Length: 101
Image 1: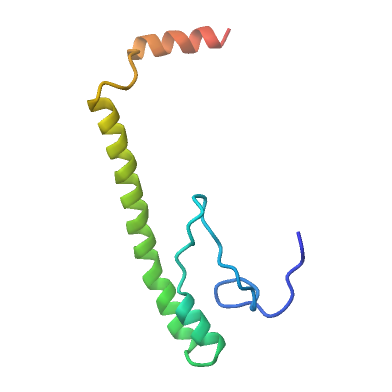
Image 2: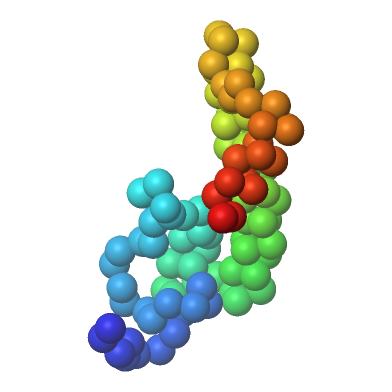
């Protein structure tokens, strides 16, 4: 990995990098880019950057809850359409014992 040079920005990345980080699904991570850019240009204080980052956490939390609910809805739909697991708990335990041999 290449060593980063230059001053670090408030978001912990070296200043001057043009690419935004992406999450595991390829979507751009939510970061207060507008505030960070204004800070770099001297148009905003560091306090404003911190405020933007504090507002970011509840938004990320809400996004995670929405994703969780969507995935749970997929599982419920799959089960409602007749899909799912057909083994009982006792059968699962029996398979675990067979695998352990």
